Image (cartoon, rainbow over all chains, first blue to last red; front, side, top):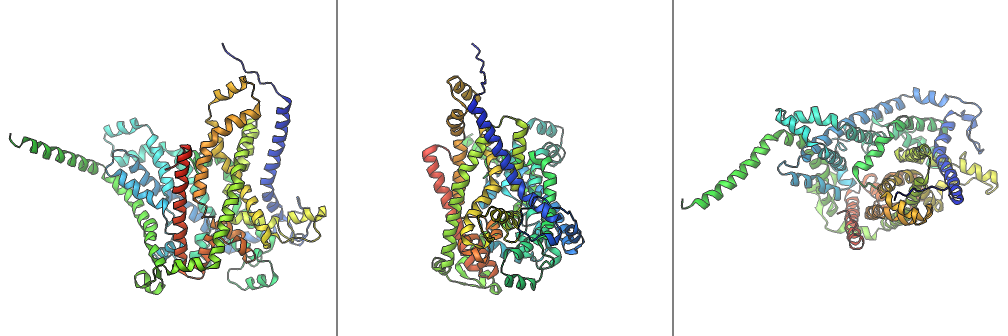
Length: 300
Length: 319
């Protein structure tokens, strides 16, 4: 007997739906509000900034702050550095990951187990910040643009994701290619990689976001002003505002690298500059980002 | 054919041996490919492990690792007597545990609520918006927070003043008592959307017929959520809990570093920021390395322990 489940709209169900919808709308507003606050701030004229009124809008929209930051060579250089590390870092990362994932995906390759274990062990133990710093120093990475892309050029976690993906791909294609006389390298480049585009796109996006957002290596390794990233500029502005007492701020003004016009509007405009690429890219590629979690199984 | 048996054995081992060799030969380019990541791992993941011996020495940079004298567990002894380290240790625990206690139920409840949304388009939009903070660096998020809580022109102070709740703006970020609430709320803001993804995908994997038969038995939506959906995501939740408990000592450096300042060190300084200041700013490399190793070992032990207990009681484990 086929039972038809009739979804009767109960009153309590509808009330719940109303509350839920309201809650979700409020939630979305709370997520978006800080962004909006910052956007409005970035367009506010500087003399109107320091007032404690509830600002959801500004009467006069000016682009002074943007004009300032886009004409500041320090900020422009930092933007170029950020772009460099995002592009180069992602490329190297994807290449290295694929170079390890493909061989390890072959279940019949000799010494597979040993090689896999070799890659897995560091996931549980790490030397920590200090030994890594010392190693990088020995390698000459201090104040070197390479420090942005080489130490982080490989990630075991990502490699495993790609490896698993390769393993789930249909063997038949590989087999027929082998029969046709293609070498393993040829198979990799001409066949597997095009087929693995979804997962490669996902990990590339992950890496790009990670690189764009990185600033810590800049903090500890960079000494020259020309090599700092955009996030670092933002970080400095934060440093300046977070130390409230006037004396500390005056002291900070004497430090090298102090952002001259650290007024709030400039900080807001710079924040927007940092956030904009991600926001632009995000809605369209959101599904790739999310897929990354599924591919990896459980990720905290 | 007296020693035929010997011959056969020799022949078979030779056969297998060359089979393997032949495979290696055929796949030699694969080994070449993997050489590059292999080297990277060696240099950047294994070599630092070697650097751990720094923590057992009185490390002087000029003398290098070998030139510096051993001081055995001196650094570790210092650790337990350093009141700032002890403070950082307990701050780490406090922040970690409270963070977990808040976010764990919240993400689950949020996932359940999202799951109840009927209109797919609305659901999609809410989810997309909720993930957005996850992609911001903590520098950006901290900038948002400092701005919203600013005593000069921040939103929160403006609202409170307008409502008459306070007569003077409060410098939230400089006061110790506001740090933990601020830390937890910002953690929720940044993580609740993203954290719910796992649970939503787990929910998607629950057998639909369970819902149908519950419907027949007269269950309403609430019943279904509590008695079917919730138990359905328990395995996932358990695994996540294990993962999080294992990393309880590694409160993220990024987040704390951008949110703390000398005024709030007392409650905000955690092990990772402590290591940073001691190791890189004060250049006490050996001491900081000791702290790092300490953190690592405890973390590892915790993961193994929680994994063991989970397996014992639940059959759900990672390792």
